[in-house]
Image (cartoon, rainbow, N blue to C red):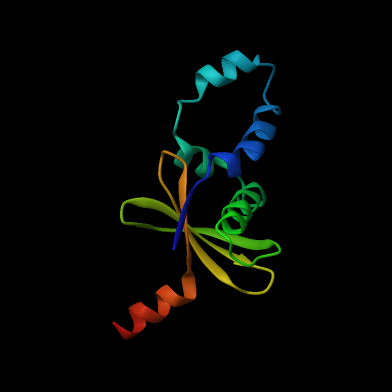
Length: 118
């Protein structure tokens, strides 16, 4: 299990989204977004944008994935928001995120195997 801050991962996506606003200045957009509320920012992304952010988290954690084909929110894990991302090679990763931007990437199949036997 690898934990890494998601800020550098999701920031390019979030900045691109900020550029799609309705004429707000950069200062107004920055003031409107509370600092550190990365879970809410992730939840606001559509699936394609979320796939990009989760891909970066997976790759930055040193895991193998060439592209995230699908991602879905799942039940919180240890009080943290969670998503399952499926890569093009059918590997599945559980990514948890806290409001500080720290993401944890875990092999979802290994977790499923432990819960089925335990």
